[in-house]
Amino acid sequence: MSVCNGLDRGSNFASTRKGADLPTVFHCMNGGKLVNVSNSTTPKSERLADMRPKIQWKIFNWKKVIKNINRLQTRITKAVLKGKWQTVKKLQYLLTHSFYAKSLAVRTICQNKGKRTAGIDGEKWLTPEAKMNAALSLSDKSYKAKPLKRVFIEKSGKKKKRPLGIPTMYDRAMQALYALALNPVAEATADIASFGFRKFRSAQDACGQAFNCLSRRNSAQWILEGDIKGCFDNINHEWLQDNILMDKSILNQFLKAGFVYKHHLNPTKVSKKVRHGNRKTSLVLSTPLLLDGQITINQWCPKRHSANWTI
Image (tube, rainbow, N blue to C red; front, top):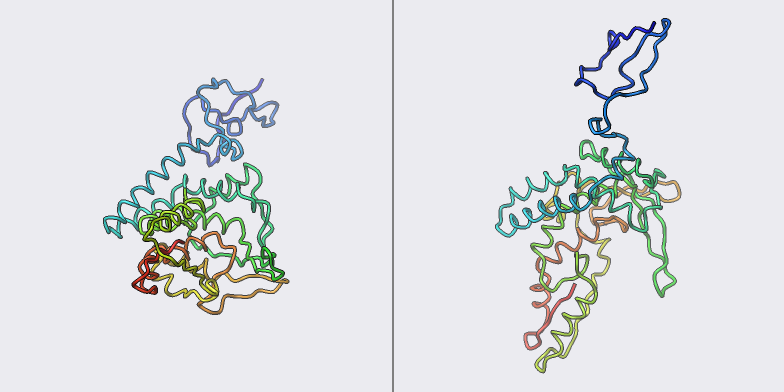
């Protein structure tokens, strides 16, 4: 005759509600041998949710996730417009530590073309289980960015190749996460005629702005085309850390990651170099340009000609 002994003595499991579906906790004695109870009598409507990462990722309500994140980003934008910078920092902290934001960051980097390209650790997040575990593991505690994997890609119409740095999947997710908190600040302080690296804006919008500025009879007769020579190589890291509104320690990790080429580590020694390939590079570098690009370029042009700077 089998005798059920309930919870094993010495077990670390806490007491649970009556009828809980825990087949691996309860045991029965059958001839002196422990036998796991595999058949649950709890109705399906009352059973605990399936905690397997694969199932959890597949049942995500992404519309609800995006709606909650947009609500918090809206609060950040309103705080920026009112000049409440301490509130901005608190809301950014709340956003970057939100599980919804972490999940969306993982989803973002797993949907682009580079999802099958691994960094120096060779890790890829291709399965729902891997994505869910990644979202649960994202944290800024003791975060240290790994070096980028250096590759060279061809420039369009040129024989010369351009260096490109490929971060690890974890670093990409961290960059996407903090980009969610920095985007509202960049949008709130951006110039109305800037279109590069901005959400819901495209080259067609820039063409429309150019047409509006050049289609009048009294429009400017000259078009000024500007290019920042060696922007990635000459940007000042100290200036970025003083002016980019985000966690300084995290930003420093992004900027000082270094790169690996031919199994050789090349650390970032100078304070004036940003690696190509960083997901946040475009946003970090465009933010200072969005602040006062219109005013600065107008100061360079002769007073008799009106000028508009489109980024």
